[in-house]
Amino acid sequence: MVPLSFEPFQTTISPLFWSDLVEYKLYEAKLDSSRVLVRGQYDCGRSRIIHSKDSNAQPRVMALQSRFQIEFIKKEERNLLFSKDDLLNNVYHKAQNEKSNHVYGYLYNTNTIEEFKAIDRNKLLRQVSQEVSSISI
Image (cartoon, rainbow, N blue to C red; front, side, top):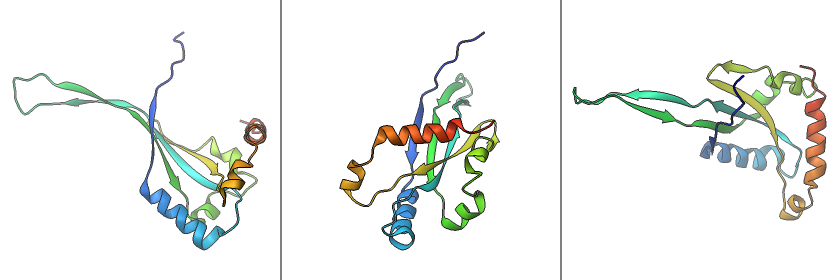
């Protein structure tokens, strides 16, 4: 049996994500700091064969690193995706294809630095762990 190995990946957050988040905070959430649904997409790393224009040159293999991209989900789409109760049950069954998987998660957005500093990260981790462990797969 081959041992499990970790494939490092590059995480990117597009400028559109930040623009959509600002729009959400200004016009929708305002001072509401409850969590909001976001989507990530994981693309597996793969290799590409690059052929040179020179007919005598050997083709080269170029490796493309795995990527994880995060995107903000607009309100209309969030409402269509899932109800609050069945969100976590559906999250783990949403593979797009074998090379790319969509995952859903929550963004905890605070309004002040004091509110951010007051978050009990251990409590939050335990709470989310309980939510994940309660999923029946």
